Image (cartoon, rainbow, N blue to C red):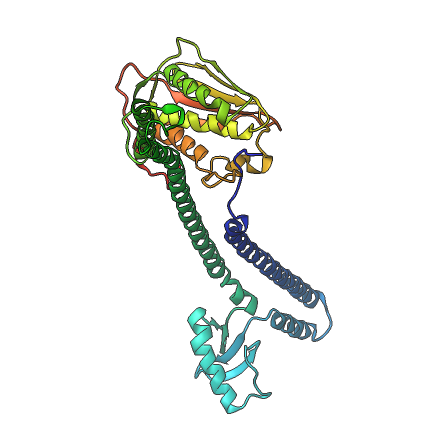
Length: 423
C-alpha cells in the first residue's frame, strides 16, 4: 500500500528514550531498596527500645537484692546494641573514661595512641554535631548511627539523580527536535526538487521541439502551440515557487471562498485523474452558501491538493472514490472532510501520520501531509485530524475559522515559525 507510513529509523529515535527510562528505573529501584533497608533498621531500633523498656520494668518490679544493678547492666547492653557512638570523658579535665560503637577499631584496654585518637574523634566529629550530655561527674558525647549517616545522603543522591534525569530528558528532547527539523528541511528540499523536475523536464522537451523544423515536429505542431505549452509549464513553475515562498513567510490572511477553492481543486484534479488515479472518481458536496473562511487561497489549495494526492496514491491500481464535503457546525468554524475508499491507515503509524519523513512511497519524501498540517494548524489556526479508525477508508477533517465580519483578517503570529520547527 502507498498510504504514508514511517520510514524513519526506529532504532535511532528510541535509543535515547530507552536509556533515559533505564536510568530512571535504576534510580527508582535503588531508592526503594535503600529505603527498605532503612525501614528494617528502624524496626530493629524499635525492638531494642521495647527490650529496654522491658528490662527497666523487670528491675523495678523485682524485690531481689541487686536486681536494680543487674537491670541497669542489661539496659546499658541494650543501649550499646542501638549502634550510637558514645564517648565518656571526665567532666573536670576531659580525661577519657570509656567508649562504645566507634567507627574504628581500638585495643582493649585502649593504648595511649588510641586515647588520643578517640579524643580527637570526639572533638572533631561528635561535639561538632551534638552537644554532650552532662552527668554528675562525666560528659557523654554521642553521634549518629551508620544508618542515620547514610540516610542523610538520600536527599542529595535522589536530587542529583532527578537532576541528571531532567538534563538527560532535555538533551533527548532537543536532539529529537533538531533531528525532526533536519528531516523536515531535507524532505522539503527533495519535494521542491521533485515538483520542479516535472515542468523543467517538459520545458526541455519543448526547447528541443523548437530546434526542429515544422516537418520534424510530432503532429506538425506550429510554434504557437509550442509557445502555449511552454507558457503552461511556466505557470506550473511559478505556482510551485510561489507555494514554497509562502510557506516560509508570514502570509496575510484574507476572505477566501472555500467553495471556490474546492471547485478549482476539482477542475485541476479531474484533468489529471486518468493519469494520477485511473479508475478513481472525485465527488464534491459543498453547499453554495458555505461561509467564507479566513485564509490564504494558494496555501489552502496546496493543503487540500496534498490530501487528495495522498488518497490517489493509496488507491493506485485499485480504483475507488474520493469525496470532498463541507458543513458548518457553528458560527465560528467550517468543517471540510476528504474521504477516500482506499486501504486505510495502518494502526502503528496513525499517531505519526503527519510527521515529516513518514512515507512508504518509493518516490516520495513524506512531506505532503506535514505541509498540510502546518498550513491548516499554524498558518490558519485551524485543526486537521484523521477521523476514521477502521481498516479501510480514510477521512481527514479540516476545521477552518470563518471570516469575521467585525475585524479584518490577519496572519497569526504562529505563522512566523518555519517548516523545520515543530507545529
